[in-house]
Image (tube, rainbow, N blue to C red; front, side, top):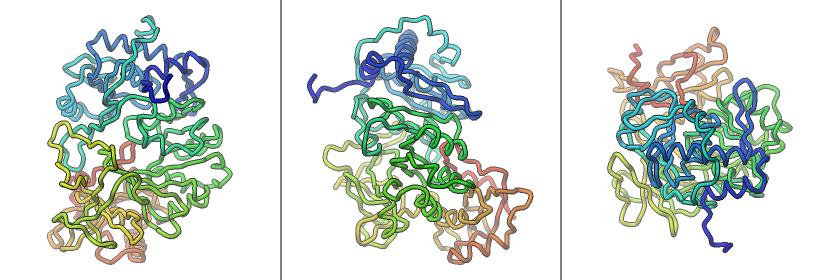
Length: 494
């Protein structure tokens, strides 16, 4: 076999299953701690059987299959079946309301939907339907390559449903970015998947799945204490966590470096991370093993660094990796170091642009740079610092407030478990900064005066929230995301 020969995901699974059918490759962990192992032989046979059911329901190469199941074994089995056919996966939240999924399905026009709780104009397969495939032929299907491995669904801050299509063929080592983020040894990694499988961070199970000797542990639902136990129990070497997950683990009592000795690389991605959370994690694992990343679902580029850089570039998310970076004002003029503006990125040689399905794809600048609307600045060494998304910025009394900065200040309060900052209408200020807070003890929360004093010690006065709301739980998705615009618009705070 030539070293340059392409190997499809489907063929790779067939080869691995033939070599070691009894090797456990994926283990699902339920909230009660029970574990469901999936062996390579089972992954191969069930993927082939489900693929034949998809064929019977009209799925062929390059067709879209929408998958709206939770982080359960069937999710991975259906994903592999889709790739066996050279089709395209569209992962969707399993708890998405019908009206919202209807809008996305109208844009996607899938051949089949796999869901236990949704209807569609095309065939819908449920978990029971998947069980009924057990009697089908389990031998390998003809080899084919998915030209687009998966689409990403997004309503963004605009609320307009769209699909993000990135060039990503279903071949082993085809996702160079995902492979580069694995620990340096590359093989025999033990990956803990904490994010839901529909999310871009959860979807990263693909790269280790195809590596020889690797094993993957998928949490059906994230829990900070359980994640810590799994890392120690299974000698986890690699994981990707969003800031809320890192924060909740950092808040746990009685944890220390001994609980994370197996970690080779822990990656943070997503929203801006509070500095105290980073400081805590750099006490728990060596700084060279804690990695910062900044990118976008559109794949415009990547910035990265590790904890060693944190000491000299505190607050940064890293420098460009195989891409170019530029900060521009509202008129697309480049800004000097230290000034906040729009983050523009340009892929390096060979990089291919994304496309939107469902709305026009913005044209890049003539020099190839594009932006998704995030704001930030760079220092003299080229390290990027995230401010916020333009859509999330609060204008109060004519001043700009970035919610992420206020949330980071609030997150350091010892009684605050989670927090979100939103704009609410105000006759005097136009909008005012309002904080929605989840606390450790809802029966004895910190007072508004105490929270104001805490924030005033860390923020300029105009950034300090004027009103506070204590809730049982901040309404985040399983991936840790929130919709600030909706939260603020829904609230009538006097």
